[in-house]
Image (cartoon, rainbow, N blue to C red):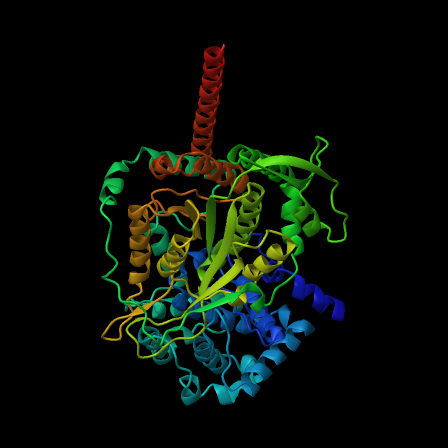
Length: 611
């Protein structure tokens, strides 16, 4: 049993949840709650989510999922109570492991004065659980120990949320009979969700719809969103069509509008009560590189080796003036994994054979800063795993090209500052790699903190980008490049003078900060969106949808950018498909070939003059 616990602790919780629920790989499971102080209690909530998803219509859940995180947390909490109701009525009640986890969860709630569950709404869970217990005697008996927590006074004791979301909780409590009548048979579980979901809307519809009626209404309004997902061929055609549309769309108007530098004085700075933090990644729970990441290294080893050779060639081309001696791995012509990659896959392996060579170098003149969004919205489609691979692989490649690199992540602390105007959450900057550190196995281990969802909170992409930009401007490097890895969905909140949440400021501030940096032209800023489009935010971006895109799109595009003169690079478009990266790379090769030809002509001319 102990071995089984260890195996589950090291496994991907989403994979375990999907396996228990009988879902396909990649199926959406919502936000997973995190309880740092009690992993067994955390797994109890995962078990309830899995049981609920086994009985519910997952396409319907995906269609109604709120875009903002707070209502999404409430929906997930209600789904977990649906899972509890299904647990006491189904074969899952025979699972001894689930009983133990639920016991640990009950003890955690009863013994902890202020339970802290990340990515979760405990109030919504308790309100919905109270309703379910009144309808299901079996559930009431199973959760009898939690009765002291289910009084109205105790439920609304929890505070610290924005006023509009406190109103949602009160509405759920006051109108709980809207979905209470559906608790009963396993076949009615979708009806519970259909009655619960409208209470999460700002302006709910007074007419109550059944599950099938709501699904039909969503189907008509969203043009068949609830249909089965298209096959791979159709998906590729859709992506190609979207890319072609973006390229053919007139972008000159957008670029013309950005010539004038926007002002940021409109936005109120954070008050003195909001104190941001800067820490190193090892302050979190730093894991060793998990097996799933090692498998990705092995699967893409050949593409990685090709990309490394391109960056090593770039290092030779860039610094031909000052001679120095250094050790490099010897390659016999076949596929050879880099030393770091080999150590990640097999930590006890021997280092590769090295040889001493003399290479021409000059003083480093370029610095690249990777800014990573590690907020809770990155958990959608497990984007944070792709962010890990982008940071690790691109930093390794840049290091091979002798380019100074730093990696900085941004999220927020779990604290909410009351009675302030403006930003009401402190930003937490996590330094994964400094400029002076090499990219080695320690860097890969520090980046593993991204995979720990407990550090995922809210994101202020605009403020983090501006903070990184101001740091980068102070660098003595002649060329400064900032790569912003994001999902394009800032989730932080601002508070107006009236105390209202004006969260739309977050996205608008991000857009204006990027426009400001592009207009100043002191730092070259490139967007690296993950499974999304940010053409309305960045003039230049490289969309990443898979690990192959890191080697086939991002690496060639950044190489081409660095090979271009700085003035020309500001005007150079970096688009979102493989063809654009190929065109840019070919243009850079032609320019380099032309420069070499001119050099040979000049040398022959000098020789003839001497003769």
